[in-house]
Length: 506
Image 1 (cartoon, one colour):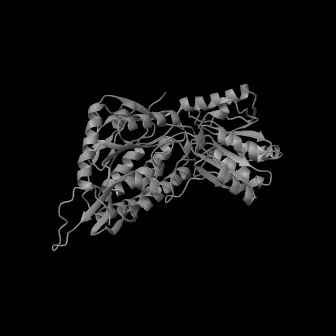
Image 2 (cartoon, one colour):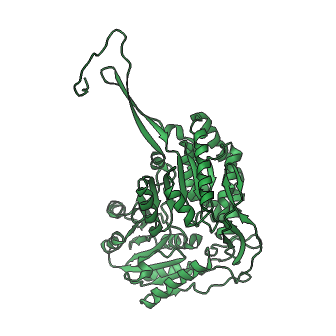
Image 3 (cartoon, helix red, strand yellow):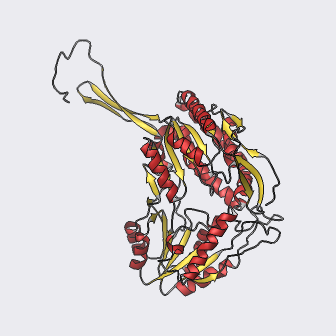
């Protein structure tokens, strides 16, 4: 394994880059070349404590800012992000490997939440009830939690943090972000942007690290909440550990998203959608479609259309060559590539038919890159691990079903409930599906139904653990806590006197 750069990606503490003294690092690869392009610091306990303490001091300052002054900083951050988002896209492509247009799309979806957060004064208003009892007024206040932790995954190093930190900061909290150690540089870029926007030091902290940093956030009495996106086993661990320590938790886990295709559907639209949703970002999306449930007799025609489209896809380095951008880049690491490949082996050994095989895929000039070609499987047994487990790669499985009811039962019997879609021209069937399917996010002729920022993102069952979904109204509720105030100002001419009875409204 070659190394082209010995730089170390560091922490961001107290408004500046802070070089680690832990002596521990992890490699950061260029997935398109397989080359180690940097190392990322892995925090020790002293650095964890320092980061959290800095955030606590930042909260003391930021929470005293007026609503109007906080809003000014949010608007400044939004304008800087919009003007310089191309820089961030380049960082994402270099470290994650996704094509640049996909990186830019990730940023734009995250920016939607930033834009929602600029309107936060309306979303943190309390309520007022005048004269609830004789001379008594009751009103509520929404106040920030304090220091909050965000633990984000490798597949969206900008968008997923932006699901949480704009809302948390707008509401008056201080954020400690622990990004994935696989692509850590986007978090530092965002930290620099916050400083330029005028955010006080300590309000946005980047803590690089591994499980030690995660556990440091989970166990700190200063950290009031944890927001997480990742695999279901880790989401469950985050939820159980944080909840045990009295924290609020929103932990978004894994998925196995199905697309139910009825016989009346437009198969060209379905084929386009299946390819886009199955192979975009090399399948490293929690909202990727990984199973197509084809209600017979459409399976053969649909498989042919999907295979034809796969044959036109360009796979290569995310940055492109000579101005030509590929459709799909590499996977994040060689370890993950090999894991994805193993699922295709499992499916084949369980009786599935490999229609398009992405195993052993190589890109000329990037032979050491972590590439895996788009893969299409037919007749995947629903007992196979390739069907039941999240693959998180460019593998699309087709399962043939006899009816709508059989397809619905397969979706509802799964342990995940993140996203799903139905493709049909029958409005009654679509309406029935949205009411009967046990999934948190549903697309009707839409393959990746990620809600816009003013709604909230999150699934059901083992795809979500905790108290709230991400962003939207759920996000502002999560990052604030309510006080109810009961107030009476006595008329100077009267006095209630002594009454030891239970207070009554009148």
